[in-house]
Amino acid sequence: MDRLGSRCPLPGYPRSSVLICLLILTASLLTYPLIRTLSLQLHSAVTGSFVSGTYSIVFVNCPNEQIARDIASCACGEAQEQLQGIGISSMFSVAVLGKKLAASVNILPEASSLYFWNGEIEEATEILLLMKTKTSKVHMLSSYVRLVHPFEIPEIFSLPMDQGDVHYLKWLKEGMEED
Image (cartoon, rainbow, N blue to C red; front, side, top):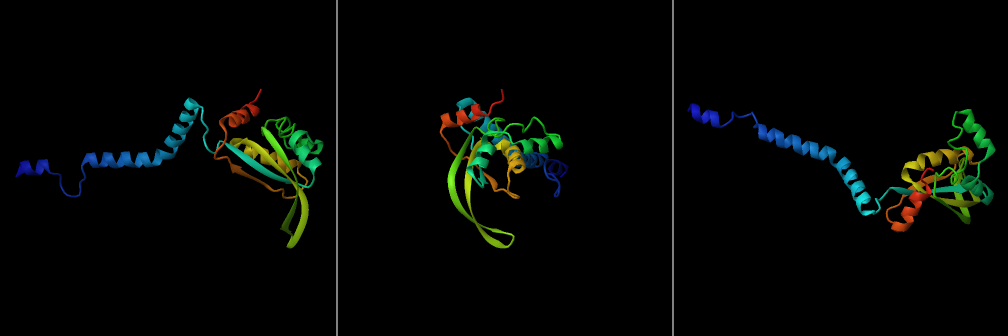
């Protein structure tokens, strides 16, 4: 009888191998997102392929073409003064392209916009900017646009790029590399 009890565990006491399996399974489930991200980045580095979501397209509305061009390519003095006042001087001293917040900006022609503003339906003619950037730079780009944009609440949103030509995506990357 003593021998039988030593080979079979008592009820209610799981074997150590079951506990180890449960720990491994739990650790695997918790680290899956990290392991997947690292493996995609490694695959991208080795093969030169594109990782979905690395780049984004930022959409911004503007009241006219001149403001769209100012946001895209030149510094606005008033915005520079505001930025210096809050301690951000050189970071945004040049516009989107000059500071490499985006590699490319398209200024699309006039479009009619209908929207609610202060409880009323408004209609306006606007210009749309499409800015291609790294997803990691979307927040800085949005902050810059909010500071220089004449609208109280500018339309700023982004969509991640899911697919793209490898040569174009390489060009985007090179266009935003710091000197």
